[in-house]
Amino acid sequence: MTVAPTGAETAKEDCPQLPTTLEELVATAVECEAAGARMIHVHIRDDDHAPTLDLGRLTDTVDALHEKTDLIVQLSTGGSVHDPLDQRLKVLDAGPDSCSLTMGTTNFGDDVFSNPWPFITELYQLTQERGVVPEFELFDLGHVASLQRLLGKYGLPAGGKVHVDFVMGVPGGMPGTSAALVAAVAALPDEVTSWSATGIGRSTLPVMLTSLAMGGHLRVGMEDVLTLAKGVPVEANRQLVERAVEAAAVAQRTPLSAEEAWALLGLKL
Ligand code: KMH
Ligand code: ZN
Image (cartoon, rainbow, N blue to C red; front, side, top):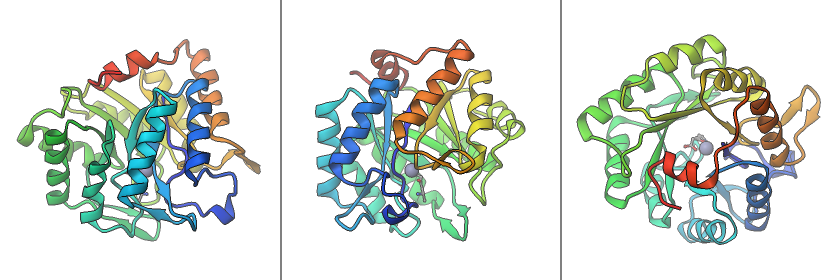
């Protein structure tokens, strides 16, 4: 299970419990690992709690998470919708185990999350050179087709495994429904070795339950949802991990060990 604790979209002033400082992020990571998370998808903030891709801060964050946890550290190369492409490529210089790699441009609410093909191919080749394992983020069915094209042209990722994450229910992307997830999984290229799914906002539970039923992995966290139920705010990312572990137990799915999770991505703990 992956935890995505912060994201780039929610303001600290609207959600003071969002982990935006390094101390808060590390404390969240430790709690979420104890609850069953095995990977952390990281967006960081500056001193004003605004999204940043500052390389020094990213490096410090990777180092701190490695020091305090056995989580696979995945840095976001998506950043915020305002981040320039060249800065998003430089994220790899911070030395993460994994990075997100979104397979196409998508409308993102009122904004545009830009991922032109030349950016995708440059970032992908950089991950191959650096030995960073990409997690392919698929916001739409067309992104699945683009992944097939990418793998056909440039071969397998570092580590030899192909892990994808469906991010569903973004206004502008595929809907967060069981039907959409079934269709997207059916379209995956044969090279894919594992997949997870997350649903934004109110699509969180349908996507989580469908993924569990289909044998998929999960991503949870305050990047994707800020309420446990209508009117009930998430107070800590740990609650979302714990809820997912409980749902998984009902489905007779047990969280992976750290060793299993690292091996799943072709990484060594
Ligand atoms: N913040 C979104 C614009 C990623 O992390 O790679 C992009 C995003 C995806 O969250
Ligand atoms: Zn993200």
